[in-house]
Length: 147
Image (cartoon, rainbow, N blue to C red; front, side):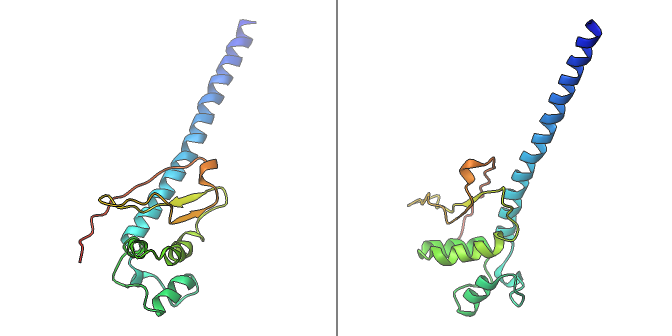
């Protein structure tokens, strides 16, 4: 009887450790996704996107209308549009970038805010329901020179 309980205890501990590592990696995946999205938005310039292809139709439309500056990174362009209260065009940029890579099980919300002065806590981009899913928060601060 003691051997039976020892084996049962061993199996329960092994399953507990195994399920911890399975959930740990899925949480890491969400963290890496948010980090990768922020890195892509902060390092990729508009001119580096393949606007000739059909991958970014809304960005291409904004670019041909002269709304976008090709020398700025995506996040800088979004911040400029936000400050001009042109949230719809900022959402179009994010929709072209994020929609192809966002899975249905992930909700996403992007908020851009000023560190000094008036702060906006309203999300610029929100798809799915991020409050109902496990997720991660990634923030980056940018100090932009005023021109």
